[in-house]
Length: 369
Image (cartoon, rainbow, N blue to C red):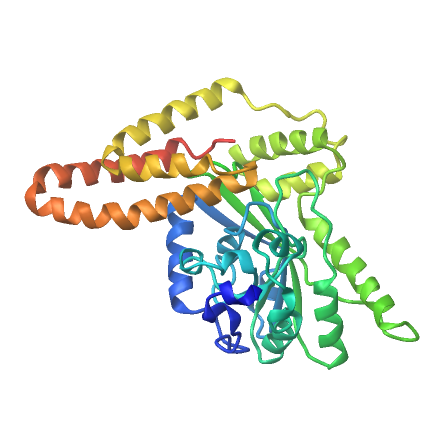
């Protein structure tokens, strides 16, 4: 039997209580990793008030940079629960980083040999969670990819929305776009664009359930495309990235500049679309100098570098860097504490040096692309 290989904590969904906030442990570890790995995560609101009302929220987010996209979303909504691939919940190591309502995707069935029907319906669990007043995060693409357009949106979000509307539940649908300046680099910047609430205009009327869901799916897709990376081709994507990078150096929002360019690629043709090589070379030098000051953290940096070679695409490099670095940190920090008693002067100076390097890379080396 396939489910015999699964931990009992995964086979059972009773531990997930509808309406409950994200457990403190996951809020803490997500905040720690987010604040250490990324130099800055900025929230760009279409309207701040929409995120502050008391309605339950369904957050529909673009999926750009692996499972740690969820950590970025938690910057805006710290108590939100999420639908999570069973791949992220299938081992004690991964469960130390991730939690959520299990979802078995097609590629999970192929990779892990798991049948979807051994779990309660994730859609039903999601609906129950929102009805109980909880906030829910959903990545409609189902998987991440560093491309110039979103992957095809899955119909699950439309099914959840249709059911909630049918049952008269009052809730907000908030689209969210993630914009990484350098998705594979330590201490890079991220912007979260929180769009205007999606108002579903489609009514049931004489439509079948499938037709109604399709209309909802179209409305949701259109709204997400407006606030996500959605370029017509790779050339526009690269130019939009460069344009937004240069605007961001001058104090403008990277996300808003990117969206502006992809919507009006010819209007902005006179602006600088190229990133100065000299500027990037200078930033790289500062990054290397910063790492030299962090010599006491060499085992962690090395582990992160080695782990990154397991990535199969640019959008998973940071995923493996974070995992490798976190595992090494759990081993190396207790050793440092012990060494501190034997070599207090050397370890103390080295830790101050590492802190200086950490601050330096954020001040001088964060504008990498």
